[in-house]
Image (cartoon, rainbow, N blue to C red; front, side, top):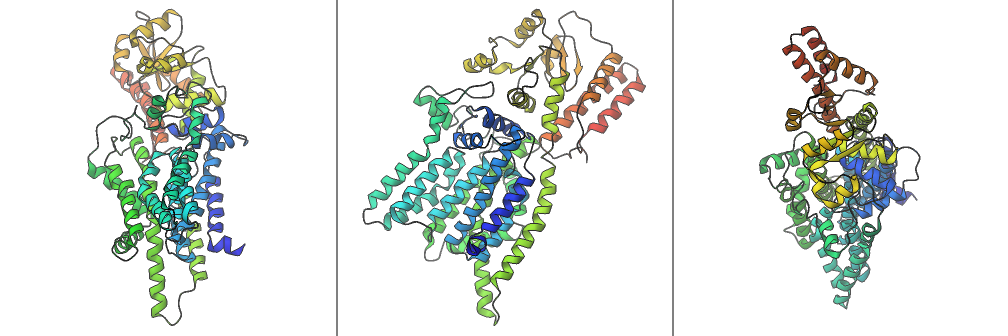
Length: 569
């Protein structure tokens, strides 16, 4: 038992699980968090590439008490802790002794970005686990040999692809593992055959996407092999793009953000040690696995981020940040190896070699201190701001209201999360009108395709209140409108617009009912920041309109209300 707890990283993994469970998000905290938490409860197909392995894992944990978001967060925390255990084993398989492996894994496990994405619903925690297992199984001193090594690598590769396709960027290491398996067998071809068989077995979760239940947040079940390939390869987004804009951001901005994430994760100094160790290992005997690791690190790091087509600012920063977890994990291997080299050199030059037990104790103390900082950092993001914004909005809308959006934003997915998992205001119809041209989406929301104007006219004829986002300038210009919470209500043509004083009173009454009982976000707290910018934006526009109309007293009051809702400096 002592050997498992200390030498094999069991104690560190258990401590990590405790930390990740402690900060597990009980609310949805982002678009993917909302989607995956919902599908973990209701079932369904996630956005491409479908992520059936992770969805099934969340389904298996949906029995937990509490919200759908909380059960998904706990399920993710378990995967995060398992990835620490696998990474510790991988570090040892690549030559590090227990103390060096523990130090490296402790630093990694306590990094704020690792703590965050190991404690909220997202596909990157299972991806980290899959990659850590590949590193372990393919290691020169891995746990298996020959056919068993090849078969296990194939299964893990397949399962990894059912969670996140970026695990394929570690293919060089996996292929070296299969090459080692071939050398360990008299019948080299059996290793290849078993690796392929294992991969097919690992991909079995994709059967689920063909039979998954459907709801308004689920993508359709593929009905042909070509449709399945479309889903797996993310063709609707562009297989090699992040969000499908087709407009790569200047490389320097992406590399700068990547470097910032890596250096902060590894305490600024350790990345230098890791890269230096990696370079040295690539030119020494036994270099082939290390060359593969260097290639995988380059593919998963700078070469991947240079493809991103979203600006790494505001919500875009959250989108790209998650992809930095993989290169951060890959650096654990050379960092542990470098720490081992330092320990060996100190042992050679000192009459009293450093004690491994003391180094481990220091690692756990550092882990405790670092996680305290990480918990404070993660608390900025794990607030109810996004979920409350959707709940506040839904509860404020009149019966049978219709919300027409031109984007898949936070309010869209959060609304569906509340309607599908908590049965919140299911009379409200929320849909993205540009996507009605996609037959399966139009069928799901029950709205026939038409122009935005024709849709507004249709719903007005039916007597349904219509709302849009404040940035819908064309629709706001065509119809009488006024701010209503974070939305804008469109009135029928010719209907009188309430006086500005009445608009002020209406919104003041609405905001008094809103649940805002949590700390204000800062200016870089992702979706929480965005939500409060929308809150404050409503009052900023009212203030401007009131000032232009000469009502300076109410304008000043509106301005102060908006300023109180603004993200903090």
